[in-house]
Figure 1: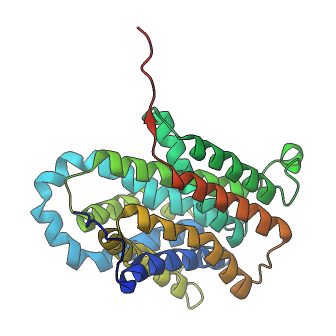
Figure 2: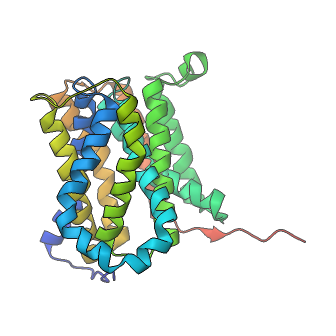
Amino acid sequence: MTRVSSPHVPARYLLFPLLAALIWSVNMIVTKMAASAIAPAAIGFYRWALAGVVLTPFALPGVWAQRRQILPNLPKLAVLGGLGMALYQGLAYVAAASTTATNMGIITAMIPLMTIAIVAVLLRELPSATAMLGGLLSLAGLALLIGEGDPARLLEVGANRGDLLMGVGALAYALYGVLLRRWALPVGPWQSLYVQVAFGVLFQLPAFLLAPPSPLNSDNLPLVLYAAVFPSLFAPFLWMQGVKHLGPNRASIFLNIMPVATVAIAAVFLDEKPHLFHIVGGAMALAGVMLAQMRSGARPARPKAA
C-alpha cells in the first residue's frame, strides 16, 4: 500500500528515485556501448536470463505461494513481459547501432507523454489542455532533435532508423505502464517481476537461437552484468521504495532527470558532444513532458449519443 507522503519528507527518501533514475540513465550508455561489443539478441537474452537466475532464490518461493493468483493471470503477465522486457529493451539494443545515447535518452523521456496519449485512445479519457500543449511542445522539440536542427529535413529524408526503433520501444513501454496500472494484478511486485522476466526470456529465445553466435567475453561481460543486475533488479527496488515513501506523483518527477543525466554521461564516456539542436530540442521535449505532468489528470470523454 502506497504511503501518503507528508509535505516534509526525510532527505534520504529522495535518494531512492534519484538513484533509480541515474541507474537507468547509465543503462542508456551501456546499451550504446553494447552495440559494438555483442549482438542485440544475445545481450537481450543474457540480460534477462541472468536477472532471472539472480532473482530466483528470493522470488520463486513467493511465486509458488501465490500460484493460485498467478495462474489465472498468466496471459496478462505474458503481455507485460513481452512489452516491458522483450520488446522495449530488445528494440533499444537494436536501435543503439544507428542512433546516439543522447537521442535514446531524450526519446525515452517521452514515455510519460506517450502514456497520456495511450490513455486517451484506449480508455477514452481526454487529456487536459496543458497536457495537449505539452505534447505539441515535446513533438516540436523531437522534430528539432531528430531533424538535427532542421525539422523540415524529416520530410525529405525521414527519421533515423534507430530513432524510429527507439520511439516504438518507448511506445511499448508506455503501453506496459498503462496495462500494469489498469490490470492491477493481485500478485506481489517481485513475484510479478519474476514471472514477467521469465516470459521476457522465453520470447527472446527464438531470436537468440537464430542470431549469429555472439559469445560472452571480457569486453561484453561487464555490460551484460550491469544490465542484468542494476537496471533490472536494483533500479526497480529503489523505484518501488521511492513510490512507497514519496508517492507516485512526487517520485515520477525524478524521471525528468534521466535525459539530462544521459546527455552528460554520454558526453564524458562516449564523446557525444551535444550540439545546439540537442540542447534546444531536448529542452523543448523535456519542458513539454513536465508541462503535461503538471496537469496530467484526464477527464472522461462524453458518451456518444445513441
